[in-house]
Image (spheres, rainbow, N blue to C red):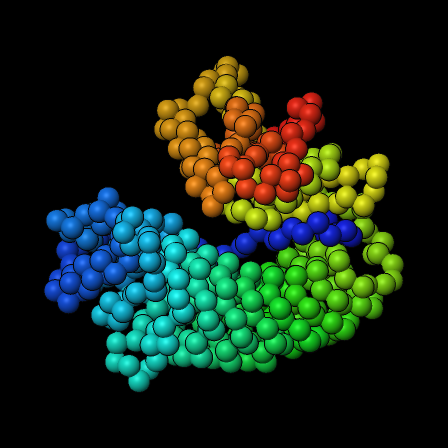
Length: 452
């Protein structure tokens, strides 16, 4: 068993997300229902969707961004990161009543779209004939949602993915979540939820990812979490959990890869059963009141096949990536900063190195180098542009300041991940004292080589 890194000091970082990808690779025929056609127009108006995304005089199933149809019905609506019209942005609201008319709607993704309001009770209310009973994916991450999670969410029994992170949800977790037996991913992180972890969650046998981090949850770490035998990611960090970690917790979690219990009030020793988990790759138990020795293998059994090490303490990158997250940014798997003589940040390994080394690296049968084909070049250029566009579109726009071939990293499929993030700085003058502390330009001589 190999653990990539054990955290022993806390720097307010958050785990990268590991959501299940539910891709609707489906045909887009004509919309056959007039009710659904008028409902799309109503939704377009109530949410203030811009004409460039949903052009009025065109066919939604063919020409509207994020609309997926099958057999003449809408089955998927994705307005992630859309921007409202100027008029609608002045008074944004959670006006989605028109969704009730899409009886076959399987996926609704509004992540990053400002909704301002509470999750409607009717979403899962079976007494309402038009509730969203076919829904499998609900993504309302970072939508400025307030209020509590409605108990009626338990009526959406086909749900496989519930993503509600980055909002201002309050109150206790509803017990209705425990009815969602098909649930694979549950992410309620970065909200204001309180109370203990509800018992009904422990019956979700298909759950692979549970993220309840950055809330106000209290009580002990429940040993019943061991019932979630398919769990691969468990993140309970930055709450107010107390007591010790029960040894029985890991007795059935043989598939667990990522564990984050940092930023709580947990005490006592870590159970030996934790270190015998065969799939464990990432552990963060920092900023607690733990006692006892570290495991014997710590510090001598890290794997270079899964990670790249940067031999410098760039806290700026940890701070940055704890606040922003995007598929085009280099993922940080962890950090080890306790040893003054040997500090490192652990990045995801990039098999194709950086753009500078990949342009002429491909060789043919004669041993001669040849450049990347134009399709791959276009893919890389598009990926880099998307990463930079994300930084520029943040609530406080960010400038990369070090865009060059060596900072454009490439995974095994030549997908772009932007690196050299330690030089990122804000484009505004918001909280200048804080920004000057977080974004300090490092020496260029310490830049890592992600391709080795």
